Image 1: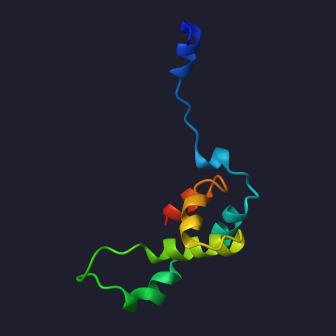
Image 2: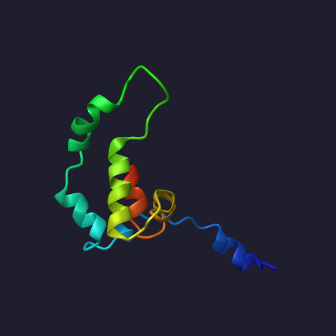
Length: 98
């Protein structure tokens, strides 16, 4: 059973930024500083249609997922997308920030 003291402790909200969670020497942080992934849009432009079909997954996200897969030795793209949220404090954020 939770006492009144424990209940008041549970009501606190902690605001944390990615900058506070991720060490300055994190591998993905280093890659992000060194690589500008915007070149992927130019390489893939002819492969995507703006008018036909369903909305696509951002090609930069796919490249970042593949890079995480290789860097961390994960064999499955499905496992990569799931594990990227938990492997490194920045992995999940790094993929979706593009």
